[in-house]
Length: 148
Image 1 (cartoon, rainbow, N blue to C red):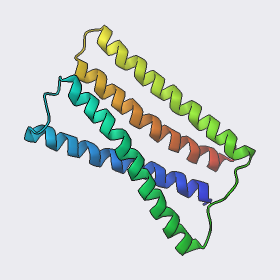
Image 2: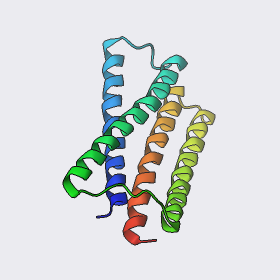
Image 3: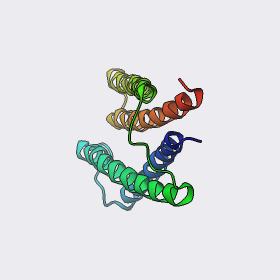
């Protein structure tokens, strides 16, 4: 397995792990009453705005740990260059991720148009954010495996 495949597998697992832990934390705080009403815009704004730095910091920490462990086990450094194949894979993964996010965004706006609750719109939006990150990583893994 190449370094890029290992890195994307770690990224995929960290996305899922961080998202699950974060939402368990949000649900526990909501149930305990320390957060405001679920229909409040401030609640949903806080959930999204806190999710972003939690994801960034969590991914940075997990990637540092991965790089250290990978160096210890395989004595392999992270490649310092990217060739045309890496750039092409990056562009295709970005395309897949953005398409999924835009579909989720349109569905979340459509839920408002048909009269669904505001909370559903935010839930769909958050799920499309997380699923677009997952598709980013899955696309990378698939395209590196395919060699295209």
